[in-house]
Image 1 (cartoon, rainbow over the protein chains, first blue to last red):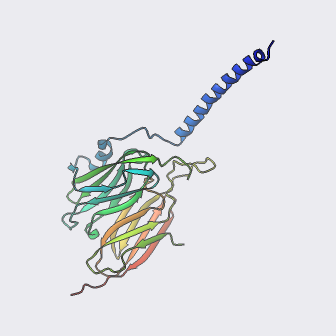
Image 2 (cartoon, rainbow over the protein chains, first blue to last red):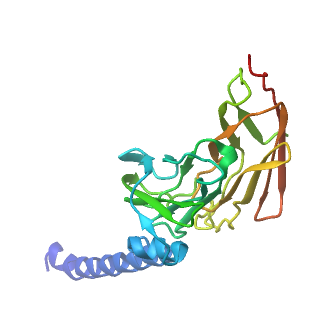
Image 3 (cartoon, one colour):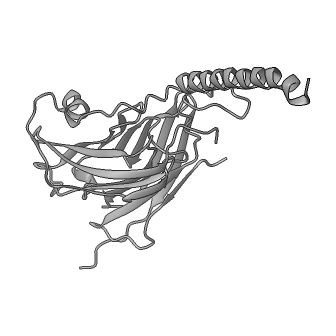
Amino acid sequence: MSVSDAYAPSRRRWLQHSASLGLAWATVQASSAYAQKMESGELKTLAQMISPITQGAKLLQQDVSISAPVLADNGSLVQLGVHVQSPMTVQDHVTHLYLLSQRNPVTRMAVFHMGPWNGRAEINTRVRLAGTQAVVALARLSSGEFRYAQADIIVTESACVDAS
Amino acid sequence: MNLARMQWPERIVAGDVVKVRLLVQHPMDTGYLQDLLGKMVPRNVIRLLTCKLGAREVLRVEPSSGLAANPLFEFFVRATETVEMHVEWIDDRGNRGEHKQTMIVLPTVS
């Protein structure tokens, strides 16, 4: 009996063990991903994002401009600026400004209440993005109509991943 | 400890539209992340933030976990007279914070 013959069954068993270990490891990984509620596979459509807010009111894609990076390195901190073309007078002004995310677990990232006292309908802030997606800025005017704009942002490192 | 910082231009004349930068120190925990020991960190974000210029509320923000930690808000406001800007916020744990700063406005030259 040669040395290699003696080792063959044990090597086969070792391979089997390692394969099953790999499977178990994959299961552990999957369950932890599930525990973190990383349902980032789901991308909402524009209608799904906007219609709960507008509820059938007039909606136009104009007058709103978004300034955001095309490529954001870190999803935990993305500069986002929104400017609405509005005279901001008592008769005609922006009352609400919604920032909506397509992929985040929370679609409505922030709501800003504004009025004629602001003088200029512009907001700059920093948002978290869970992956590459489109971001929508929706403005409600004092007339009850809505205006919106959307911007595609590529995110190389998603928020909601590590413990930082 | 002061948890908020506010900035605006040094020279403001009545009638100007002023850019206000407001930075609030807050972790804005999303509730989806684990700490280094693998324990889930409960959600703790600012629920409501209001800015009052004198008696008038000039901005009201309802943030969510979608805003970055230590959130920055830049907005505009029309200045008419020297008044105090009063910022207040409340988070999910019920902790309140506030910040007061006086905006000095020069009268218009006529």
